[in-house]
Structures are given as C-alpha cells and as structure tokens.
Length: 236
Image 1: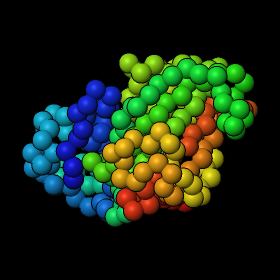
Image 2 (image 1 turned 90 degrees about the horizontal axis):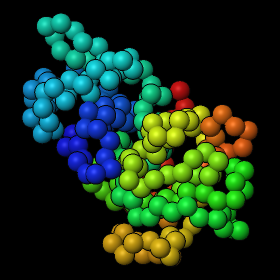
Image 3 (image 1 turned 120 degrees about the horizontal axis):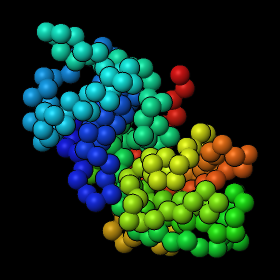
Image 4 (image 1 turned 45 degrees about the horizontal axis):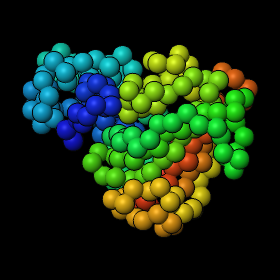
C-alpha cells in the first residue's frame, strides 16, 4: 500500500486512504472478508498518524465496506464502490487499483472550439488540462470542458477529484456518464516528460457527463498510455 500524496491540490489524506482501499477492494487486491493489518502497523506503513487512519476507516465503515470486530480487528466488506470519489474513474494499473491524482497544467475560461462536440447551453466553458497519475505512475493526459452554465472552475480551489470539486464548490453532482473508448493520437500540448510524445498512438476516452439537466454539462478527452494503465468497467 502506497503512502498518500501531499501536494497543494490533493484531497485530504484520510480521504486518499479511504479511496485507495476502496479501489483495491474493487480491483480484487483486497478480498471481501479479509482482515486488515493492525491499525498501528498500517499507520506506520503509510506514514500517517493513527488518528488519520482511523478517520479513513470510519469513512469505509459509513459506506458499509468495513466491519469492526471487537478484540479481533477490522474486516473488509465488499459493498460496491458507488460511494467512491473516483467511482467514475475507469483507469487502473495493469495489476489493478491505484490511487488517482492529477497535476493541473492549465485552467482557462474560453469560447468552445468549433470542433468540440456539442454539450451544454453556453458558448464558453472552463477548460482544464491535467496530467493523470495512478499512485506515482504517470498514465494519461486529460482535457476537460465544463459548460459555463454549470459554474466556473477556479485553479486556486481545484482538487484532485473534479467530481468532488463540483459537489463542494459548484453545488451540483455528476449523476451519469457515457464513455467512448478507442485509439487516438496524443495531443500536441502533451508535456515533454510524458512517457510517450505528442502524436503517438495511445488509448483514448471521450466522456459526456450529466448532472440533473437533460443536456450534458461536461465533456472530456483522456489519452492514456496502454503500457501503464487499462480501462476497466465492472458490472455488478
């Protein structure tokens, strides 16, 4: 299990810990009914305080994913991961799981380009470009457009999870999404330190996302390195 990330736009450490465990359960890396290590041992392994770890475990307990047995320990219960901050993030490491995080490259409010698929009702949108990681592995470049009618994304308050940001800062929820997965070329703006250069052929995801409106409020494109990540859709 990896140490949580501490960077300016990271989620709170206890949320990161909870999300890491949720994704490991979903990927089968931690099995239903498995007993977790003792809390002090887990905390030392993750380089966090026991108090922080207990907050993370309390989050899992609220989601029905952890059972505390007095005198025995903490046991995982696979109740599904619908309560995950990253429930709609479908990329995983080849071996499964991995905690998502992101480095923000650009945040701008711009007119929608003519070649952008139609979504929302406004003429402008917030455009976010990011580098995506799973644990410490750089896996993807991403461009997200949020329709201006849904609110404006501010770089100063942006967190690793855009969906959490929408809930906390803009007051709406993403309720469903439609993905189209294919093969495409990395965009020209791909950073030079990405494992593959701009123009290289990689896996490619287009996503439309809806809130409570009839038209989608968000459109995104994610180009991922298939040598480092896989797209996973689990049906339960």
